[in-house]
Length: 304
Image 1 (cartoon, rainbow, N blue to C red):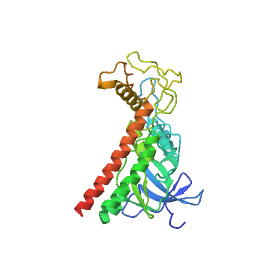
Image 2 (cartoon, rainbow, N blue to C red):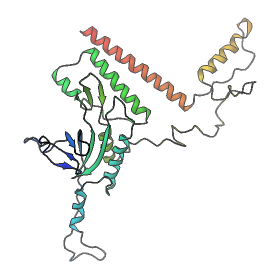
Image 3 (cartoon, helix red, strand yellow):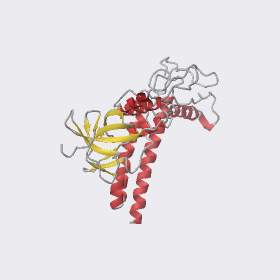
Image 4 (cartoon, one colour):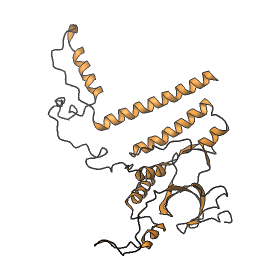
């Protein structure tokens, strides 16, 4: 406990004393007095709001009153439901990022609150070093760089599966653990910073009308669909994939003897559904990323 003799955040998290040559630590470990565990605390400075305060009501126009000087100072306390819209959106964005299910390639966020003109994000303390610290010592081997890229890609797949986009991948947000694993951090802090800049980083909620909701839409008169199958099972409906349509067309051509033109009309190929497009795109992304990692490894091996 002597190590954590600095300020106390939210009456719970004890910070260490900052170095004499630094004003305050933007990212440091802390001691959680409730759980007795060490945690990592990140500071996101909030924008300073400068407002004119009239201390004397004399000479004010009708309908104007003097501002209470103690109202602004009340916001310096700890709060998880701030009144300022920008701060509230930032906290809600960071809290939404913390709701992503646990994954071995992502760090956990425990608490988000505002205090002293800053937003504080409390997350798990990982026995790891930032990738920037390792690169400052020596460059990575091509094989190790491919391993790091593969682990980061795994973390991004998890985020994208939940509708999130990281937008904060740097050499400092990629953590290399002592056991060789790679973890991705900085999602909650990046979401809070985006919210402070006026953006909405939180993905749309899943449900009716959303991209992840049930595909219920009115039929398009300009769209083409294949006729139903004679068996009436519905297998020949418009939800058929492009590959099935291609196979059916190929069968119709092969059925014509002598290689002549097909006598029977071929069922038109419909566009894949939204779920099919996402599956195809994700498969292409995975193959492209894997091919890129292999190409980078081979290029590094040739250079070595």
